[in-house]
Image (cartoon, rainbow, N blue to C red; front, side, top):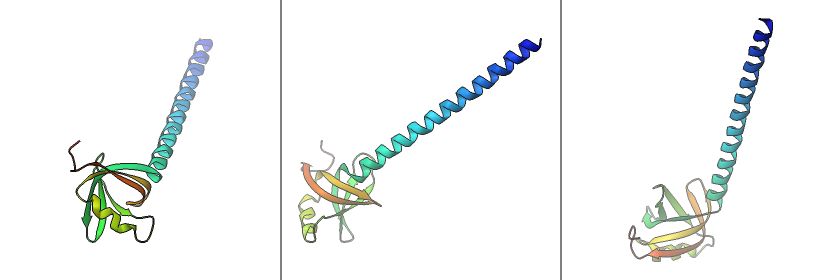
Length: 115
């Protein structure tokens, strides 16, 4: 009888230990996924539609409908976004706090949502 209780206790301890390891592994996987998402958003590519709102050029992300303010990388490049208003584009750059500092931008379609 003592042996059965001892074995039951050992089995319960092993089960609890395995559950703790699984939780730890899941946490590590989630942390890795978050790092990948952060890297992608910091130096990524966004496909969407360019518009002008309140004197700023913006890009509405086609994948998740977020609105990003477009920021040029040089002082006079803001005018270059005007040619893309109403067009679907792919913009590359670094993203921070709702702003995409654009390193390159190119037209995908003449009108938004036509692909």
